Image 1: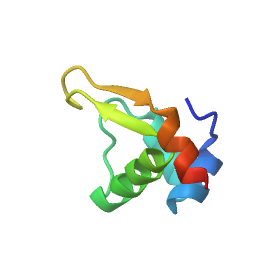
Image 2 (image 1 turned 180 degrees about the vertical axis):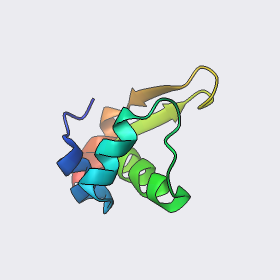
Image 3 (image 1 turned 60 degrees about the horizontal axis):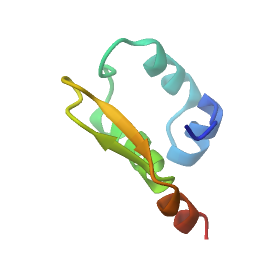
Length: 73
């Protein structure tokens, strides 16, 4: 949705790109340190990504462009 690479997400979140790539290949919720997942979630939310549904049942995401524009200011 944002067109980011793992390196972009690493730069925005402060999580290493190798960790992000490892999380990407895992099925379901990544097996990771909770603080790392929170950093990734926060970075995405700052760019307008809204997590919807339940992570285990009917997960989803929405891009809210207004939030992304505001965070770029």
